[in-house]
Each structure stands twice: as C-alpha cells, then as structure tokens.
Amino acid sequence: MAQDRFLGCPAQPRLPVPPVRSLPAVLLLASASPARRRLLEQAAIPHRVRVSGVDEDAIQEPDPIRLVQRLAHVKAAVVADLERQDAASQGSGAADTAAGMPVLGCDSVLVFEGEVFGKPHDPDEAMARWRRMAGAWGELHTGHCLMGPEAGQAPRLATVSTRVQFSQLSPAQIAAYVATGEPLHCAGGFALEGIGGLTVERIEGCFSNVIGLSLPLLRRWLQPLG
Figure 1: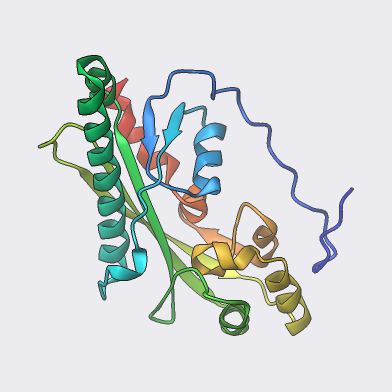
Figure 2: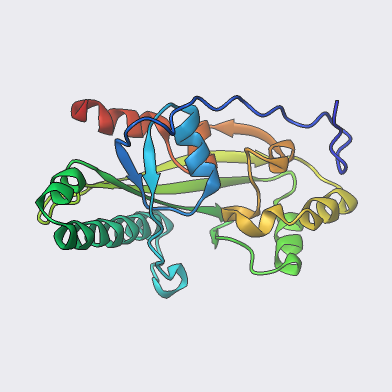
C-alpha cells in the first residue's frame, strides 16, 4: 500500500467515478476546480464546465460570507451571459438547450482567527499559514449561486460554513506538505480530498463543503428541476 511521505500513513484510496460523462448534462459548472468537478461526478450529476475567468482579487468585501457569495454570483452570472451570447449566435435550437441548463458558481475561503485565507500566493506564505493553523480550528465558507441562463431569472444564493480542526503537525511535516505544491491550489492552503486530508483532525458540518461545494444544498436546489 502506498505510504504518504510526510506523515507515514497509508495514502487515501480514490473512490471510483460513476460513468456520468456520457449522459446529457443537467448543470453547467462555472469553475475551474478539479475537486468540484469530481464531487459532481461522484454524485452522478452530469454536467459541463465553463470557466468564468473572473479576477477574484479584484472583488473586495470585508465580510467573508458575503465575499464568497458575491464571487459565486459573479462567476455564475458571467458564464450564464456567455452561454446566452453563444446560444444567440447559433440560433433558436441552441438557445432552447442553453435555457434549460442552470449555472452553478462557487467560491471558498478559510477564516482563521478573523483573517481570510484564500489560496496562498507562494510556498513561504503557505508555510507561515500552516505554522499558525496546525492544531487549531478554522471555518471554511463556500458561497453558492445557482442561476438560470435566461435573462431576468432570480439567482439562488447561499453560503455554507463548516468548522475544521487541523492536526498538530511538526515543522518537518508542514514543510513536506507545502513541498507537494498542493496547498498553493486550494482555499485555505489544504485539500481535504487530497494529501491535505491527512492534515485534518475533525470536521463539524458539511464534508463536501470543505472540498468545494455543498452536495446537500445542491440536491435541494436541483430537486424541483427534476
């Protein structure tokens, strides 16, 4: 069995992915996150992906709950608008198809000791954060926005929050984790679904929310749509 090189523990097994990619999409994900795509695949939700290209650093909001909700809304709105533009240029048939595809935008941040942690900009920042986070609690907020591609439809907005307790890591373990490069690609500097799952001691709240989107919330939103 594979051993994790910085904690000496068995590597987490990867779950099989249901064969949903060949099915007609019922959701358009406005995100470049592989973790969010994998969550949808594991939940057997057929989807397409279209990246918004939104500059997240350009949007400023002091309240982290409002920040992630606002970012999720902007991402979903940009992608919905791009879909409408494409449909209009391709004719009525394409417009009908696009109109039936809800768009999901998401954004996540970790709040630690009152400070908002998005993705670390470099390994030094990741190291500094982890020296503070090790053995402590943080709160992971994920903003969600579900928007219909048709102009004038009211979006559905929600933020889901989950408390996370991090493991007490030694300086060598922190350095080894940062050296994997994984923390640089994740809000808060850890990936629960990856190597970072070995750095988390406890979770209070929605598990999938920490990975990137709340599946229970999405189920409630999509259920009326069939």
